[in-house]
Length: 156
Image 1 (spheres, rainbow, N blue to C red):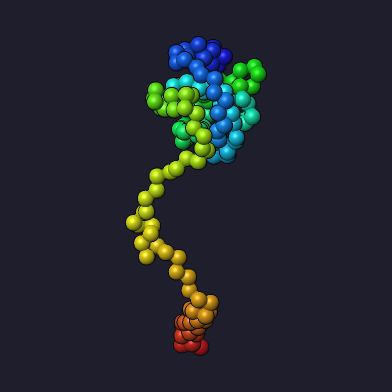
Image 2 (cartoon, rainbow, N blue to C red):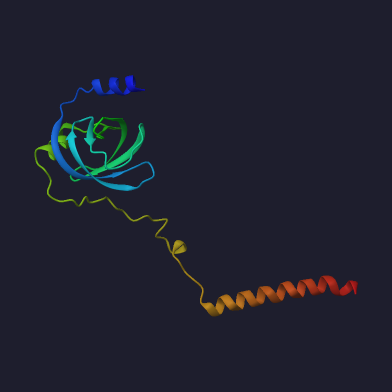
């Protein structure tokens, strides 16, 4: 396994940029961890070992200016730093927007459109009043006892 990790580490070809960007990492159980990405490239990033991640494991990384990205943890060095590879590499424009322009806002707007099925009146929560619930239970109980009595009565 060590040879595989070293091979993956040595195959890095994209230039690295020291960035120090705050981000949110989500592990394979979707637990969030606040991290600082210290090194970023088109193909991956390095983070300190603040989270206990397995190698290999699937993670998600949210960065200001990029939004959420899926990645895989591929190595951990002797100081506890994790090396991660993006599932889909960044574009030059995305990397430039984070490295050069340094976005100021930590708010990433998410596209949202109403769902016609879930917002339909038939899916809305329409609860019954307590009185109606009691009447339904009493009626069902009476009907069951009546059916039981009718079934038992002729045999007596």
